[in-house]
Image (tube, rainbow over all chains, first blue to last red; front, side, top):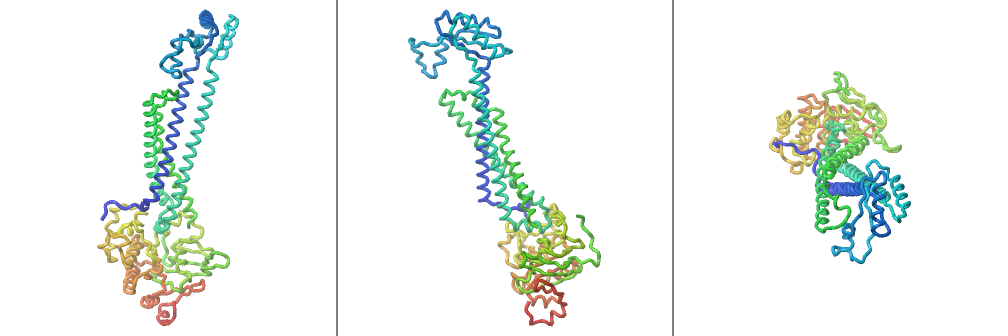
Length: 291
Length: 243
């Protein structure tokens, strides 16, 4: 006599392999969407945090005008620090575009003042006062507090986050629909077994439990593989970007963090539970149509 | 629903003016009334397409009638909820002409199926199932899959599955339809033994009149959507009549 009894629902290799592949692919895409949107959000957050409170003043004129602009800026209430940006620093900022050969001596670089607002300063009010002070001193300047830029970046990233969330939701809904369809197909294909189970006195909940467990395991396994593939893909992209020495603003934040681990770890769990619920609801609804 | 004790004179199965139709002009059963007393063995005969299988399906709660009332073990099933049907089904064993064994399970596992459904642990029923399979002559085929069994062997497994929970009522739909005459006689002897040893009420739908005459049991004849009772003595006298 066999020590372990065969499962009451037979394995359906071809159908389950196809379903496994679909759930795995959906989990891969969902996990990857999550990873990409989190990385983009983290990068934008870090970038906007960096520029928040930073004020750059472009000064037209000679070195004396620059020194005067620094003095006025330092005296302006709400300014924590202010200093001129040297030609060397400006060249370093331009290096990604102009190369390591340096900036030709004949190329006129703008004279810049880098200032930082005090933490409690109202940015808009400060910029107004600063602009007023510089203008009244007879200096021709342009004051940039980066608010417009950072607001735009925030808006774009928020929008991208919503799109990613929508994509994950859509993938999840597709997964539920696929599982429900597959459960219904299995139920129809195994109507003979369901009927014998009913005749043997099985309640609907017992039969639903058989399908539930089957699809829970499938969801967890397919979700785990999908998450693993997403991790592999993200790690590969990260490796390629680091190898290529790419100068992109997103790169410093593109790393696999605890939050990414949470996304990857939750994917199989969510896939399993969603599969289980979809299977249960489908079976219970289908069985209620039978006698 | 609580399991209900059957009073001595309560019929195990009772159909009161039962009708079943699949549309206005498509009556399968018109007006069927019958009752089976506890411990009886009865044949249900009738021409092909008369509705014998449908009647059995109503009896094992696989269908609901469109008219009339089906009572099992003294319980009127007309308005029972789905979840209340399961306890009644557990008191019924069903045997089909086409066996309906689960192909991926062994003979042992097929017989043990109703016990698994009831949540019993294997160690509590293992010996009983082996004993039952030995009783039907398959003690050496415990691990055999249905695909490797002959028709007669499959039907014996199906009978063992039907009786493993010691049901109060066995419904058999053409149980000898897919086996030769000798095996048919052997299967009937199993039903007879169950009926005598355990007082199990048995209703066998068949068109095998030779078997019915040999059995000398009561007969219900289904024709034109209605049932008539034919005493065993009268059946023996109607040798030339078709089913």
